[in-house]
Amino acid sequence: QVQLVESGGASVQPGGSLRLSCATSGDIFSIYAMGWYRQAPGKQRELVAGITTGGSTKYADSMKGRITISRDNAKNTVYLQMNSLKPEDSAVYYCNAIRDYTGSPVFNWGQGTQVTVSS
Image (cartoon, rainbow, N blue to C red; front, side):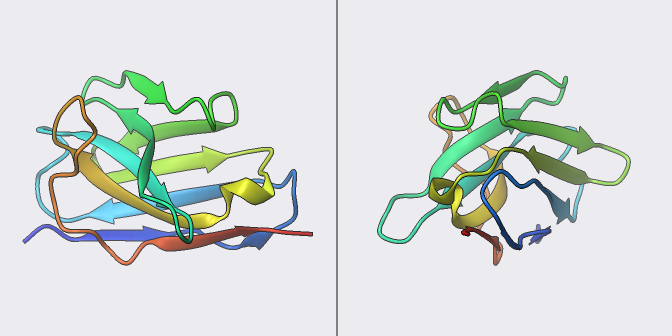
């Protein structure tokens, strides 16, 4: 049973920064690309960043240039560094393994971590 435990969310002012962490169980890092998703109230969950097992990254246009995804295979942990945060970035952020090019997740969702950007 793979567990995904997100942390690092907080309330910040516009322009602020946060670093999210996702700890996983099981040996999934050597198999799957990993991604960070977010879901704002009333909106569909969207993939905002992905990183392959080889370290190649891809970002959603909405956050490109402001976020960096990274992974520590030894710790089974994936990170999302977010800078220059905007109110529209407010959402629950989740991590998951990425199944395919559509961005479909592999595992059940964890509890997520809340990011609130407000003055």
